[in-house]
Amino acid sequence: MELKNVSALVEEEGIRDQGFVDALARVVVEIQLRNVKTVSVSGSQGSGKSTFARILSKLLANQLNKSNAILSLDDFYKTRAERAQLASALHPLFFTRGVPGTHDAGLMLDVKNRLLEGEVLEMPVFDKGSDDRLAQSRQVGPVDLVILEGWCFSASAQDSAALVQPINDLERMQDPEGIWRRAVNQQLAGPDYQQLFEVDLGVFFQAPDMESIIRWRLEQELRFNQGKLSMQESQIREFVQYYQRLTDWMLQEQPDRSDIVIALDQHHNVSGVSFND
Image (cartoon, rainbow, N blue to C red; front, side, top):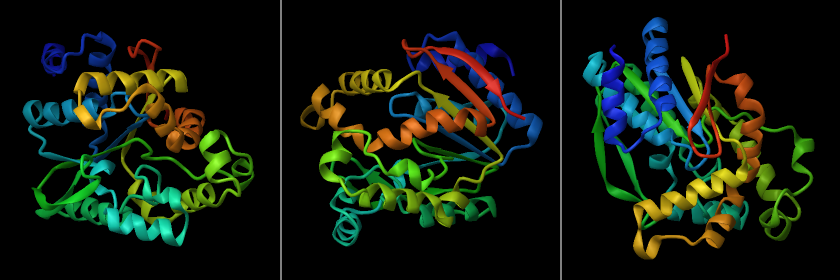
């Protein structure tokens, strides 16, 4: 593949980072060399993983004639009613979508497996505005390759000792006994998530620190201008506390566990790409 084809697609997304272009090209090469059927893209909020997955999908389809589907964790959140039941049964914090346990990982695993078997099927669509799953679905398949995308994709569970002390105000004030964070960790360790996370090629976007993640998340709010749904900086700082524990953990463990690590600097530019054998 000629690099200019990659550059053109990246520029359509308003990205001027040559490192991002090079990272995409290297991932495509690895997909070809390894005859990949499943690839995951993970990273913190605002890291660029969704944009990367979207451009990768276009490249594979248009340049390599590889039909593919993107399965995003964001489309497989449990319904409001299901999360309300979970909040009642386990802990009130489970009503807020985001952490493991708030996704229908079993359904996503089933969709993934059936796509790999060559089926055509319907998959859910989640509307963040109404915070609920839509009545309509979208058809996917048949495909040559499945791209799986999500902020906590490929994460492993933490040791129980790491869960003892709260790490932020959310955990200190609303989960002082650690019930929620232990339940999240248990969900993550379960077979639905861990089997879902099994892929041929794992790509991880490595952010430099939590402050950069908060700033990128704020930039997303300003760029997409969601009106009444937009969050102010104070709201974003509060919201990311739901994700902080697992985000911090992934920044520690994923550089050694992912096949390809795309490192980002504080300006959101790609500072390097590394491979693990």
